[in-house]
Image (tube, rainbow over all chains, first blue to last red; front, side, top):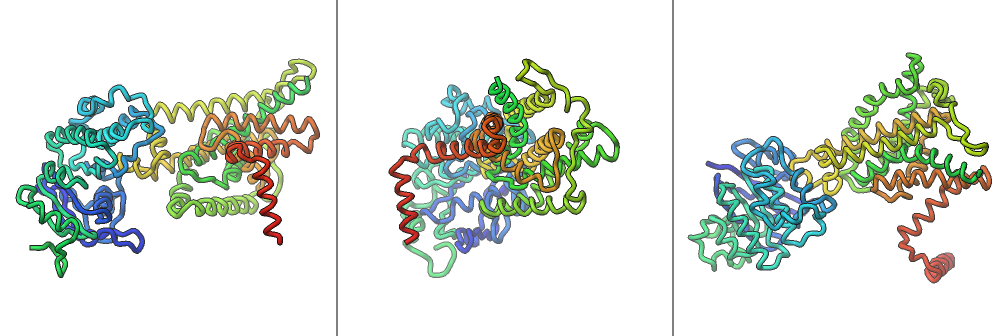
Amino acid sequence: MTLLRVEQIDSRYGLLQAVRGVSFEVTQGETVALIGANGAGKTTLLRTIAGAHRPHSGRILFDGADVTRLPAHRRVSMGIALVPEGRRLFPGLTVEENLRGAVVPKRRGRWNVQAVLEVFPLLQPRLRLLAANLSGGEQQAVAIARALLSNPRLLLLDEVSLGLAPVVVNAVYESLQKVIGEGTTVLLVEQDLTRALTVAGRVICLLEGRVVLEGESRSLDRDRVVGAYFGLRRPAVGGAPA
Amino acid sequence: MTLVNAVVQGIFLGGYYAVLACGLSIMFGVMRTINLAHGDVAVLGAYITFVIVDRTGASAFVAFLVAVPVMLVLGYVLQLAILERSLRSGILTPLLATFGLSIVIQNLLLITFSPDVRSLGGSAGAVTTAGWHVTSDLTVSALGILVLVVAAAVFGAVHLFLTRTRAGWALRATAEDADAAELVGIDSRAMHARATAIAVAIAGIGGLFLAIRSVFDPVSGPIQLIFAFEAVVIGGMGSLWGTLVGGIALGVAQTLGAQIHPQYAALAGHVLFLVVLIVRYGGGRVSLPRLRGVVALGRASRQ
């Protein structure tokens, strides 16, 4: 069953066209990775799906309902949560306040403050600290935990490994595997190709705002993905290469 | 002993400035905008109370309780209809919008109420005249104490609201990062509207005290705005309790200035404001060589 349907989305920053006519679907329970070089439009696309950025044209359907015109907070209560690039915690609030406040009363479910602390036990002793005083890995854990507290049906993760030490990235992904194991649908942006191909069942490769490659992680060979990633074998006319 | 009296009267006066500045501080803290119509909003609150007193003959305090919901609605609508739009277009637009609003409010008041000077002192009961002589030189007025108690209550209530309630949490989260707040399910526009509603209602309390302490007319707003703004800056922009301290510091500076010469009251407040501004935002780095540099630059530009 299709949970998310993106139709011909076109997103702009003024005159800059970041996403150009992108369409794809995400099925309930799936884990999909968006990959692509810097400036390919991955972050903009996630922000558009979350409602933090208004698309220029196109439609976004979530669970069959058109959410294109809904503000971000309404989409949260429908079950779309974004872990934004750069984490974006509330730095002057404590970890506990960052978490407690993010509980969405309308969306009760598997995740509450206790449950997310079990997945991210490193946060337990940090609850009273200001979010600004945490390490990068701890901040990322808070950001993911904060998104989970709305009990999302669709979790959008934007570069959760950015700026973290490899060992911390491993820990974050280990926790994420538990979340994915719970049946949450995940759409993630990841720079690390190997990581993306391992975590996700399907990858979508963006190049200059367009989808250039899409397929099951298992069936894709790495060279083809790398080619699409850097636009080495760019198709003469738009669309995915054969 | 007159000095002690001056300080005590300054604290009472400062309580008034703090109430006046509270709303300004909230709006700056949450939206990073300075509401240049804040003084006029306070005066508008005084007029609303005045109209109720005039029509019903009620006490000014009772009338104000009726005016509070009007002010709350006014603030909410003001934010959604005007300020929210201006917030989206950079930092200068909200300033211009509130500056325009200030002119609109003043002129609407002029058309409706004429430039006549009014006061609510007569309808506030015994509190305006009661007082105690502690010693021959030290007088404590009932109104002064009332203002100070209300100031403490207002700041305490706002503090509790911000730290103990879910709505207060959402307001703080919006103040920290409105974009990220949206992503955790907070309606940032509604939060801004609430902040402005609270700010406008508290400005109304300021207006009430202005009207009881002395007199007001349609153009009393701008000078109140300046005192409120000075209180916010002295206490530190964006700090709630700082604003209370800043208001009291401003009040004390003014009454001490008045001890030297009655004309120096406002001047002493301005001087304190400028000193704080230079020390804090100049980072204490306003050294002699640097001043010389400024002078040299001035000379160069004249040539």
